[in-house]
Length: 265
Image (cartoon, rainbow, N blue to C red):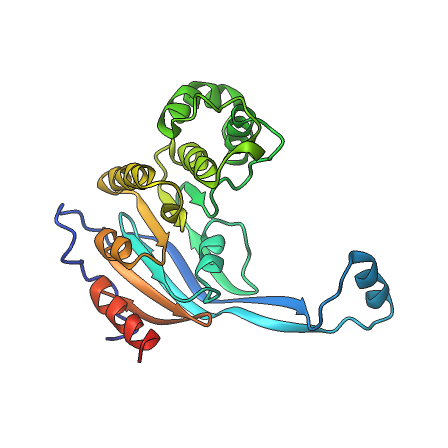
């Protein structure tokens, strides 16, 4: 299986949808380097004192190493790999949350990121207030969010709790409301990082159906998940990332099989 394999439609996709050859995301020689203290420091005060004394020693961690990748309009691209492999870091680059240390990231179109369920929610605000706050973060005006509000709450099935503080919500409730806000738009690019792993089974089916609708309308979707059945059934192509490097990409079944062989030699 070649590292340079590009598109090979999965046999599990029977709706006839195929990505175009128009590139909408391109990563060129991308590196992301994190710096972290080499020893645990118990408080900010201690850190500040040690920093002023020149005693803070940092180590560098390469989250991504020389990544090159193209994604095409209408493609559903899955990312697999162990925790800490660099999958979420790559999605943050595409979402413009993070800048590369080296290299170039080019993205064309409106991006709707679901990097973390309920990201941007404030626990002391009500669900209603958080809907408008999240909408502002995504670039919508208050009037635009007012038009969307009923539709969002209907989808999340949150009318009984919409005026309660978010700190009283379960993780599933956070997930439903966060997903409803972020996907109540037709994005050019939808980024989904493990959001399908939270919430109850009914919500997972509902969110999968909405993603399927985006795919049928030609949106590009990037998915990170440890659920290989979801990845294989939804994706046109899969990228396996290991220790910040792309190990393989191509047909979902083949890449997943290779990944499993690596995990269980």
